[in-house]
Figure (tube, rainbow, N blue to C red):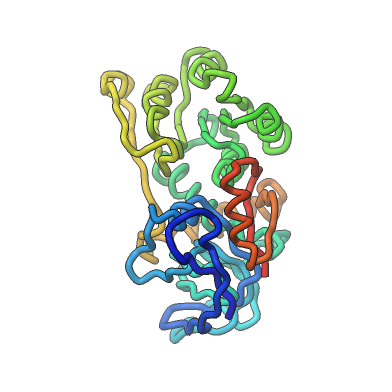
Length: 326
């Protein structure tokens, strides 16, 4: 089969097409003939040598796929060969065939095509687990999301709005701000290059602050996030594009009784991921079928142009997911 290999740590050019054997599904696994694979920031970090695959994972990058069931491992009865599915995987997505644990495979909801579905699992699993499970975001609360036009951001905005949450987001241009407001429904979109998001958030909330922050920046953003949080607020870290080192004054955390938490998903066990899959099936798939939430696809690239897809993602101009197609 065709696959994409990281030949050495470096820029997009280190991604090279290669021939690999078709993997065989083991007990409790599904072999998927891949239609599409999402391109995500963890793939970029892995390419750069900053995010090694967990033990036992494929060295082929790619954390999410969609396609058709090609074969079933021992004990799998939930699916049949030929059925369309999408799946969260720990690696191996940039290939013609990919093995996935049955726990992380999901039927496609009606109205979601197979290409767009290739960009759903990683972002939807991550957003649900962190925004609703860890942060316990509730109806009528206020949420601050950084990176509103990223795959995570576009998913988080839509899911939050479907639960009647007031959404504030930060982006890097006025055009992206308009996209978040007009296309995704954000209540306030702040251009962080020309505006102070702390001041804008405080003004918008009349100094009350936000109940939840979904942060993928880290670094000096954490202290600024805390400055615009409401009492009993919850801060969830899911990445640290601005650095993992943080210097904090714990006074505001204690006075406002804040919760600071965070998580990574890739190395969690299949049981944990399967529990999230069950919630997506019950709580999110109906929203997709009703047209309230969708997978926002910015651009697609054929598999053998994975290097171009990474270069495009590195530019930071995308609005939604970048997807490899087969």
